[in-house]
Image (cartoon, rainbow over all chains, first blue to last red; front, side):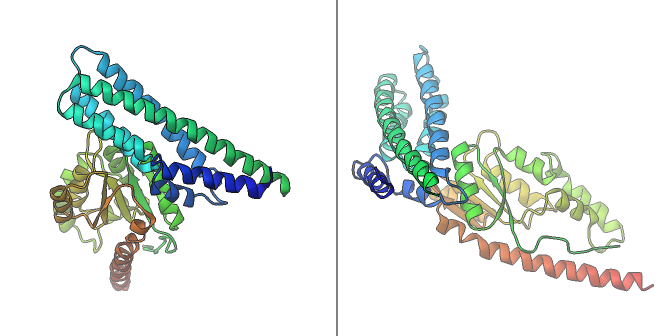
Length: 148
Length: 185
């Protein structure tokens, strides 16, 4: 596939993520911060985000495994995940965090478990799409480098 | 002698404080895109450490001021030492919600410090809580940004920095001319 076609494919792919509500405008802001002086910025941010999100989701899982859930601890984790999601433009994941926040405020363990399931679902979907996105990005960089 | 103005007049130095790795990366990129020099730390205590204040210094400054008024120096050399140690920080931008010391706590400590109270402080938060916002602004924060912070927010920083820069030039002019007088004796 040629460079122009790849770029169009990437653009359409990101667009579809916007349309599905998976990503919001904040992600465009991040893309805009990538340039020739910082050619890997998007990839770096995505990588940081995914590592962080997985760490937090695991912690939340662990917390909810205890008989007596430490809800203030849980609050802190949800806050972190919601913040990161917001910063990268992960719209649906951010909304899923709000669910967990609500259940945690109500000290509703069952509600928290359900909310966590939704978060895990949304995160997995997002990660799959990010992986596809990065694959496209890398192909583009490779082609651009070869053309020089 | 030698009160040379050796500050780098071309770049402003911003100290960014945020416990979130992603947010630190973003704010750093936003600031660098706007041609600011950036130091990013992950806590209020690290910020104070970078400035050369530890948690106790912020309260000891009242004693320092007493001492300074008894000596003959026209400018506080200790102020200059602290400033040099702080590596010429022109603005501090900090997250509000951080474990341990919050951004608000950090704001208070900076404003209590004789060396650093004139450095503009900006607070960022992911939560839009009006009472929180007004409290920060009332207690000395120049601006309050809602996260995620945008380039347009970062563009609002320059006026605060220019204000600080002209104040610096005024006070160092004063110092230079006064020293010239005393050395003429």
